[in-house]
Length: 232
Ligand code: ADP
Ligand code: MG
View: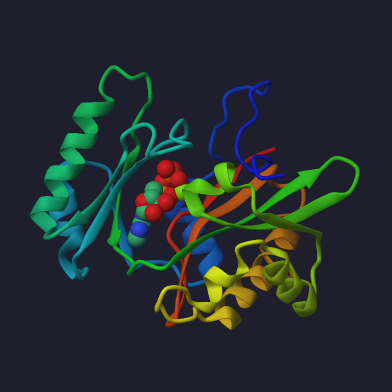
């Protein structure tokens, strides 16, 4: 199940159904916290667009073929100023030239403080319908294979049990002196995605895979720093 939400080797190359910032705006309407950010069509405009944002900043390129952005070299973290962000965008553009991946624009956003990275995803099973997934590890989800699944719609009780089922659940409660994360905030994200009237329900037939990866969990809350929607 750990790999179910990412792409399958036998499938046609995955294409995103909507750009990351569009999916983030959509999910924020369900009460899910996302970083403050802005988009531009050109790398040069990133400096101005980032004017109102508080560093450190993150820059990512977006486009229909950019499904796994880090692997493509399309994510830059820890940028100290709007000018640095614009330079990073230009470097991403240069790195992607000739790769066959078209860049539609750039997302510049505030970098969320570090925490426990969790994946919250949903897939549409042909016979069972939408299934919600939560897992620990963010980018390491596929390695750790520590996930819990439920058919949608889920209840709050389901959400809490899903978290307790994770082998690494103790990571959420604080480890090696780090404080416990705000579990209620993560439960709210699970409900906002897979609960009654949530993201999955409102997408209806309009998705095959949906993924917030990672949601960064801290004592202060849970922030979805990546959002991906693959179309039918
Ligand atoms: P992809 O999953 O397509 O490679 P992401 O948008 O998830 O790209 O970015 C890669 C990694 O960078 C994330 O897993 C996360 O660790 C980090 N990251 C991305 N955006 C932010 C952000 N706004 N704040 C903090 N960390 C971020
Ligand atoms: Mg991601």
